[in-house]
Image 1 (tube, one colour):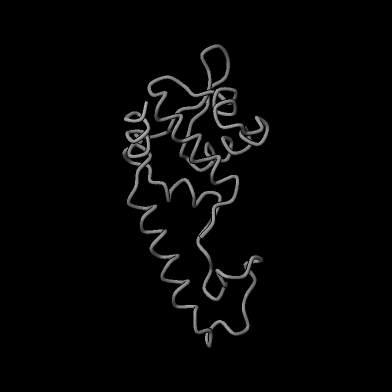
Image 2 (cartoon, rainbow, N blue to C red):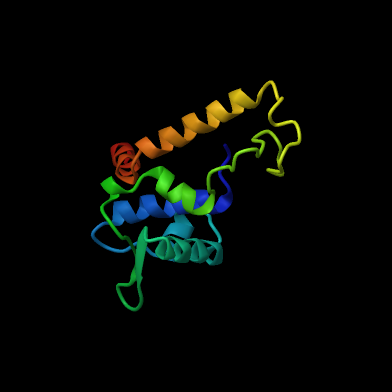
Length: 139
């Protein structure tokens, strides 16, 4: 499993919102810290709001906050918003994600499926608060 840019940006933004709690995190602050184009990050944050992971407020003191406690948002919640689970029959090894005509007979399919499941289970077991705690320890 590889994460697309939007999923990575969403993880960075979710982490920064957790670290800023109870205050808001701003597009400019997050974009500056990670070297992300602000317009791309703004679109990602809008999607996080639509998915119920974040809430936004305008004006002085505005920005973005997590919609629920960071302890109740998994990495998988965030990643799945931008990188949904691979449908059955889609090959992990193909860059295009195309349906593989030899999927059922593939000798490495089981390995790829197992790795994909392990990654998703790991993402499901790690919360945004876990990432924030790790970051606080390094600071």
